[in-house]
Image (cartoon, rainbow, N blue to C red; front, side, top):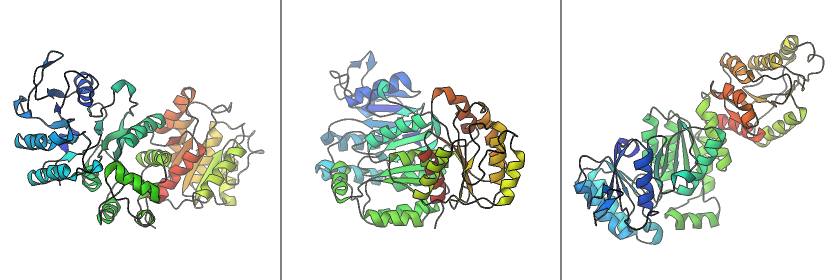
Length: 457
């Protein structure tokens, strides 16, 4: 197993390939970001030497003063093997190879030379043909201008992606949904460091509690080893697999020179081993949010629903059934307990079947009564709360209050609240107490599905 600390937690970085004439060269974009925005010491490297904005440009990695944790290589493919070997010779901790033009373009010879040298020296490198590494507030090797990136806050979800574009797009979605990131890694051709290597590292990483992968393909036999490791992992693992169709498989090969494999077999094995497979990028976000906030309760998918809108209750029920979840009837005993605790104005008009429709007249106490009652019901193992904050009786403290009810139950709770700034206090009341909140009804249902999927059949 490689030592990834120098790669993912570097203090010193050399950016190899900076240009004196092109300020938008990938190496220059990376150097500028690291120099201006991140708490690392960064050194520019170019064989011509000289100065870059009054900073010394070193002709070779050997000239850089002091130890270098991470080398970011953004040079022509023909030069990269020699550069990598120089990094190894001068005891650099690891490298991110941004450059393309290797196996994905028919130059397997260059890629194989890099791998042979790195394996012999136990030198970890990410790529080639990748964006590299992003750790909030620590490191960003993406060759994308910082002002154009949307970055999630620090959190506990690690995201590993063969595609740099998919990774960046997921960061936008994570930020929009309030899902925090511990690390994002674009592995590109994954010539050396592969999903299984990072899974093993991230399982031990104290800042990560959920590990998510966008996967295009595996080498022969690699998929089985990955699934077995994911099953044994103490942390929930989420997978989004590309190349499901024959046309998609061909696209995978030209993108990162991977073998897409038999998707149906891979999907079935994931389900059997309790690995959560997301069907698309939106499911991945919902799965990651749910699993990063909720402990892994034993969930079979028997859902209790609380709403103030009958229509929302119907929509959520339909979504549950589509997803293989159930919305069972609640016993008369539980309904009676809830009814006794409802406010006098709501008691005669609320529908206490499942979904429980408290009507638009509900106040905070009514929600607390319904959620607490479902928490005592043996008929449900998870609860979805559909909150429409424009209901006049609902306060901004309801999220925090229901979170406290949830903490006494031992059952997972997820909430739907429209994600607009006006309702931020209500949403934070849930999120700060580790209750996931979706911006859509479908997303809330997906969160329960994720909890169900993370338990083997």
